[in-house]
Image 1: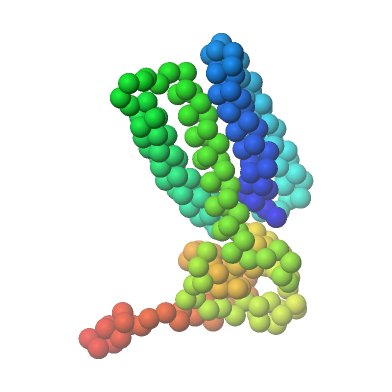
Image 2 (image 1 turned 120 degrees about the vertical axis):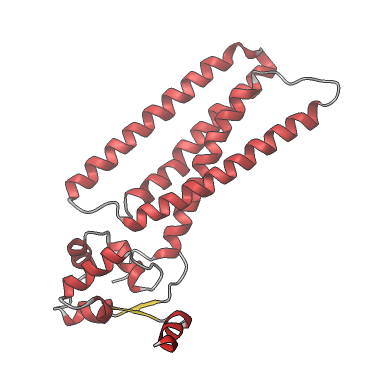
Length: 149
Length: 82
């Protein structure tokens, strides 16, 4: 398993759930406690995910440098580019869907709280990372098996 | 990655060259072992520089390592002009 694949698995199994959980919790808390805890959770989520990402990138780089193996080549670059493209397309669809859903659910008498916008953004990042990771793993799965000699 | 129209002799050449492992070839060509596996299986078409690097590893011209087996409409059109 190379660096890109490891990164995709870590993102899928760790970063996305943490991001999604900390993105969902404020929704519940807003309705229970009011919007005062939203900023606290946004800060905690950003710190955890941001900190973890850097730690994992550092860990993977050090590990691969110790092995002195090539960890990223032209095929990895192509897979990464395709996954990112797919993730951007899905992200746009998500944003359009979220906006249309919010509009349809509030129109014509009610209004939407602006406090919900950061949640849409946070969930959007989770969607992006999730789709990118899945697309990466699918492409590697179809590209070749590790056990082959 | 879709199957490419590019056939190759990498597996045979590896064994002809003292049973070279995929990892050894990958190190010499400057790519990961997974890329060599994908190229061997015909699931990834390498870039031109990489194809040349792999061919050079075996000390052969690139056409002895890779063969294009796609449609030949372009080549026949050129051939008909001549």
